[in-house]
Length: 264
Image (tube, rainbow, N blue to C red; front, side):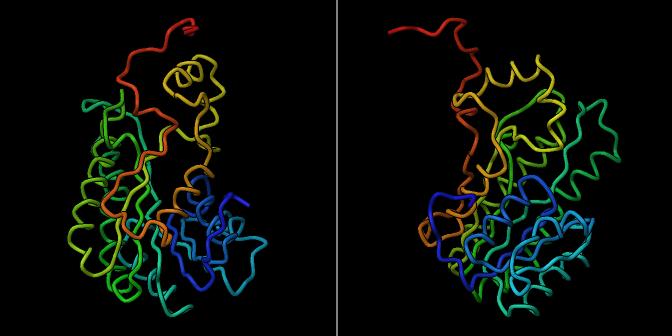
């Protein structure tokens, strides 16, 4: 099991975008382990099938599509409602990151990041809000600590994740009276298949660990555990929150840790 705690998610329906790998896969499997019915979306069927493998067929759904495109987003929401009749939790996880400064980032790269990270999330919210109003449900965006501060050579990604955070807070205000809770999780650097090459670089890994109070990068299951809590009734009075799940990364002002730990 992903989580130490048990949550009564039986009868709950969840839509997870970008569910074929990494954080999205971990979140989908965490909800499935707790008894929820989960539909995962992504561009390729095979990794989505791997995500839901081993879980009861009546509680899983797989739908390929582009989570930047309006038609595919509408289809995903409709598929959940057609299959299970309600939509309780939406996890807007699909995203993309490309390095670049304001000078080196091409218009095409900027457009692709903006279209998926921001426009796709906004469209997902727009098309799911009516169903979430009916269920008094939760909209959960997977943001990043890159949305609360800058990074070298990541100007476009930082900008899109900053937009995600502001959107989540504004949507929480607009729809609190509907009983919809809207939050975001902001992970720091997370170990996935996509990031493993950078972690295998000793110089990068050493610098990364110097930024993290808990002395390790996150794994996707760290983010999934936070998602289980934020979507649960235990977080019933939590909305409009950007929750860092970052091992203490954002606790630092940027000053390097001492070369030798102090003994007293």
